[in-house]
Length: 293
Image (cartoon, rainbow, N blue to C red; front, side, top):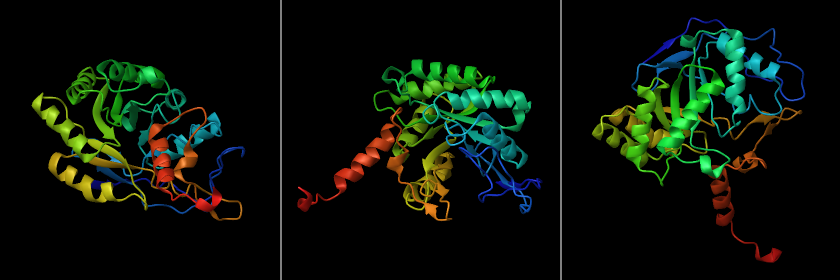
């Protein structure tokens, strides 16, 4: 189910947005008028979101000032985007703190936007995992940073093989029953893990997940195109894509595209094991050049 918005906002996906050392956000005066965004139900729930969401990883990066981040968010809202995706892994706690400040400053109605945030990942080993303790503490901390009464969708960022699935689904059900979140979903889970969570939810009368957030671009299509449609038809789990432009992140000064591999996204101050695992796998698969020895 989908519908068009009535917005006539001007969108420009060219080089009109300046980040980093450039002073401000510039909108081209000759931007074309778009017919509007589509709005769809997230999974088989009643929650309607724009088919284009705003990820906050690049917006709240060190190279973007607070004024620029606020300008981007205001432009997104004015253009009809109502979904903001956060993660404690990407920009740390800064993204939630800064987004909370912008929301309070702008005075947006809580009913007008949808917040999704992720739990599990942390740079501190003692704060990782999906125990009931960590789930509840992470959700409460996110609410304090966002200065919001609830989060719309909490995404469990990768399954925890060291924690029973029953504990995970019962903890998420408790979070929803307390009113801290309206829905929950998964991110980077396999179809088997999603089905296991769904089965446990049905067995213990818990709220089922409504969405899976997964990587999707021209080099990563199998899961999104083959397996997730089947999950949607069987158990109503929707699909939220991340990284559709991850293989082409920007333009060079001469207009050429900059192709940036996943491994270059690693940060010296933060370590994300899903990136490290992929890089190590690629390195181990490469043949050894005997002439270089």
